[in-house]
Image (cartoon, rainbow, N blue to C red):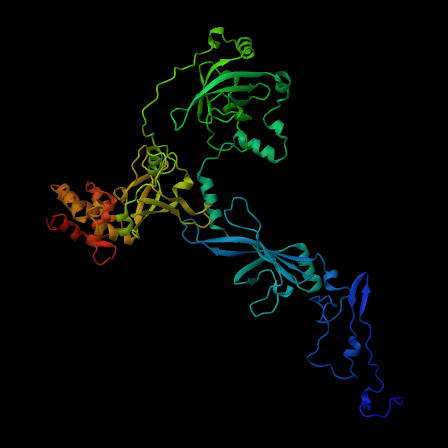
Length: 620
């Protein structure tokens, strides 16, 4: 201090308590066992005889392991950073949460099992759900790995995760019922805490339903395809799944049966009668079809019509478990005959000749007589040119567009009904529909529900399938808006075909209209001159004629349907009562009658009102 000059601004006044203190900056950044390490001078900063540490200051983080058992701020036993000392150490808990399920007659809630992972290296949390085969729901990571805060804003610590307690993460509550061996050991050693005994998962309504269903059904017989699929999954080589074909390959290598065939496709639009060559390879029972290019035919030369492979006799109904078509369903040499037809994926090929090797093979190996291998005459005389006529509608595009292409060389857009476009622009009739049960409708399709919308402006239909959770079927647009033609007809569906209880066949799919919205009912009743099913007066006249002479039967049916004796019929009880009485009607007609009698919109009608409108007094 004596060397400081006596000039203004150079005067230093040191408090007596700091005269003998070393206030120099010490080295705090070092390497410990190859890792960067920070060791702040805690003794100098927290000295009892030194100045008090300011309340707003803090000790640099990243130096201490932060073990839950140790006091906050105390260094680890090894001195290594926390992310090094506890690298790879993860606390794993098993738990579940209950998810509500609506619109299901099987379950009202679902138990979903989860695994909660707590990474000690960086205090991050992750929640995952083990994937279950054929569950129909999205499973996997629920909460990605990151530092998660509790509801009070503080981060989760191992003390918050205890077996038998609940954990709320982002509004979803998980119930922890078990932990793995490492987690239990870690809690016992680091936190002096013994975790509770493992708990049990609650019963799942779907599992109970499946168990009851399995007890009431006969055991399924194990098929060969299933056994082959299991063997393939277990690693059995593919060449052994269908038997060893090496012997056949060595014996028949290079031997090919050649047939000459024609395909007559003149029944279709722009169809023709074209020649082909069919090759059957005996070494692996595969079929190849090549196209014969004719001069001045107007067609590009595409030599291969069907790529070499197994040829099924008929279209497979579904993929097999092993992904291949069994040999028993494919063509064999005995199926090829001169004068016979070969079905090639829906196309009938007529075999009319074969080469010399094929003829010798059939006579020597299969014992065919020479008369059965004589070629057929397939040449036809050139027919006269037909008169121009409209071809039959083939189902592609619209019928109006097809007609315009046939009428004029330069087709014009078909004319539209501007009166309907202007006056019925926003009139849409909506019905709920389902697929009609039958042999072609599977069990899964029978439970699907659709919304059929009919646009009055252009007589087009739109079918939409509302998505149903956990159904296994992706909802959405089922049929694009378009005009739909009746089966085997050029007539489209119109408003006359739409009523509750009616059936529509849309591209080989049969739909039954089950119900309609309030706007549709009201619009049809206001326009009952074109919607005859919504004319309540017409159904009343018809029922009165049918009920004449059946007064006792009608009263008995109404009394039996009203089993509780309340004096009114609710829901579909009116339909049941009239059906018991032997009266004929449609469902839409009864709905119109019920809406006429139900003036207060209570959903029920009194039996006295029904007898009155039918012309039958209650006392008679």
